[in-house]
Length: 344
Image (cartoon, rainbow, N blue to C red):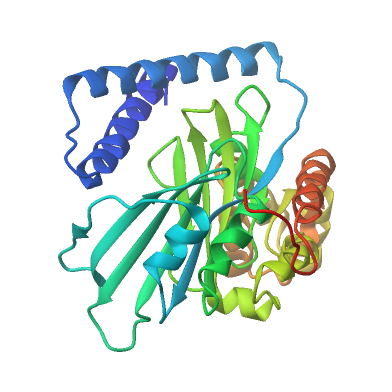
């Protein structure tokens, strides 16, 4: 695909993505002004990435790891307790149709918490009475002291979802193509979608992986959405277990690797393939891994019949080092036991 066609496709995908977001937002429409701003953003981003690639002028690879959105559930909730501890005030409740809960209230937060959304009046008897979504500030992520004050008002709450996010500057080498080419996230299927700025892999099982451009902060984000089943398997039951994320996530659930050509050659020889077949496989897998490492490994495993294809990979040391260092920095901020202090 030529650069102009790629940019046109990228713009169209971004417009569709933003239009969907706006349709889901209460009382907002995707206006002509928003569309023009979206096209401008896409053009600026494509121009920046093309210039960095052509001149090889990427910034040093670095990232910051944050706790992003957290979802809690509880069967007991006191509005008075929440407002008494935090001094927050809710907006008017909103009615939902065809949802798990009939109503929700958005509450403007303080500190590192941008907003809390409380959903109530469940539509099925097996749902908890309340579902609480904690949305942090983009620049800080969720900080433990703010989260602890909220949990004081929700003593019976259980953690159901935790999002762990790595933010990279837009001028470094990491973008969606990079994640597709080198990223592996456990057993999550990484099949590229049509949006060149936002991809989502996995489903409602144990984990969802997202990689996308954060337009408002000029960053690229790689995000793991960890669901309750995986959290419990990892031994994470409350915020004092967040320190376990360091060993639990890396490298089993986030790792960056590349295919070793010589290891592949030796594996194909051991498999007994004819020389012409070996060349055909190498050509095809090279094309596949340029688009998706996961897709290339799947081809070798399912169509070529190679066993344990992970042995054909080599780590990408600089990327893995930065991801691990950032994760260590995150978990070091979270306490091992309850902390005391004055209300923020």
